Length: 263
Image 1 (cartoon, rainbow, N blue to C red):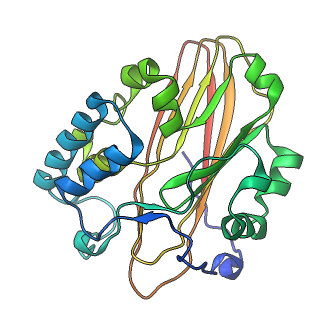
Image 2 (image 1 turned 180 degrees about the horizontal axis):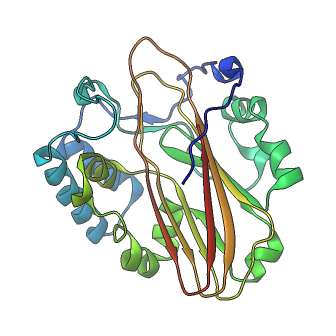
């Protein structure tokens, strides 16, 4: 794994949208009731609700990590853990709500999809608002979905692999994500299938004091190949926002799985 700081002008990412369009925002602070509300709004199966509640209990008991930077100043009671800007995930870019679409247009997402990508997902706050995969890859059995849709459409796969690479017991922030996760990418590439162009997801935080907790699960079957790229941006506020994701990568025998993240 390599990390590199690039000399870039980040000012073009520092813009804010109105939050009046939001269809739902949870109350501030983390509680069992907030965890249950997230699961209820998503219509999740009982096993996922149980997983979330167990993770919440682990989060409450786990100490802050003593590795990495100083995280002791995070005020978990001053965070919105779920915010929804649109009613559903769209497969047609023209149907994405205008303000959200304008944000991703500024960031060049539609143009990048046309020129360089085999598929793209766009998440705004807690929910994925757009997702698309090239038709020829769909015909080969490749799955590229937001993780919430994958849970509804492929529950057996999710139940088998979800939380197995990074369980909630791993650390406090793994437990936090496991309790309140929303959105993220799910990819399954069948045996022997090679995805020739990258799949990309883009995560945008807009609201002040918001937490974004996407959950990504990528499975490359035997001899499969895939490159996944994700990026995230947020405007600068005087108070903190929190981005705490979990990514689980599973490669079978002779698979090639490349993961790139840009912040």
